[in-house]
Image (cartoon, rainbow, N blue to C red; front, side, top):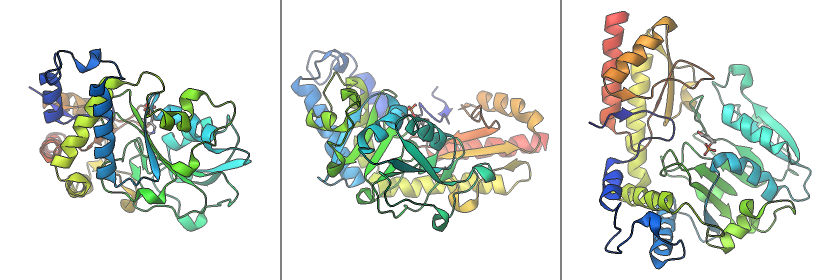
Length: 358
Ligand code: PLP
């Protein structure tokens, strides 16, 4: 009875993960308690957290030079944590504006210091990524912030900016979809509710030399060094979300890790973009080289059919295809847990809908 879920987040979780969680809901591995009922200081939860961190380090190839932090407050809280931890006595930070999530990070950054928008694709309605050689970088900036995958616009970088200052990336909707070279980054952060696990958990991967620089007004809860010193348990962490994330990391390893996920994710995305491009009935506005592997927005040539498209999709068991309220149209989010069968079913539905209405 489970349906295909194309939600942008909270997103589909692997069915095997949900089944394990169901089996272990009342009693975790002979302990007599549910995970949710255990102290975060208990050996069980500490062990779960340690294993989740070790598996994540293995999946992403994270060296000991980086702290792995399991936090709360979502990626949106990191929009503040980044300047609070990194601005120090520097006057300004550089930001790239490629869409709605970049804009939110910029707006939040402005509360704490001077933000220089070094490049923007607003003039193309966020359908492109500004060429790197046009970026007005400042070598005295505290850091450069960018959004490697814009979840709403469906725009993704397939290259990493090469800059002299610490590179800070909001990887909420791309993390774990393919291998990355963590050593290129100062800080990577992500809300969990796409490729990591359920909402309520936030990941930050911070190069250790960037710890301990928080400004005096930085709340302890947002200070990465406090989190690192306390093994992400300065206060009560979201233990159940962490447990589920650990199950997801384990599942990813069983799938063959991120190289295998990338091959699958590329196949899924290529099929879907090919179906969109092969028809005059559907369109995707993003420049081909920057089309997201995870979030595929598309429009119908006749938007008066949008409602019928969505109603028919629901009936066909294809859920959450409505585009973000700010852009309209449709969006299929095809994260790791959305199988190729789901993409095949979506394409078949789109072609059938076109036959009936085109
Ligand atoms: N950044 C990106 C790229 C996102 O896609 C999202 C949420 O969808 C956020 C930030 C905000 O994340 P959160 O809801 O965890 O604060």
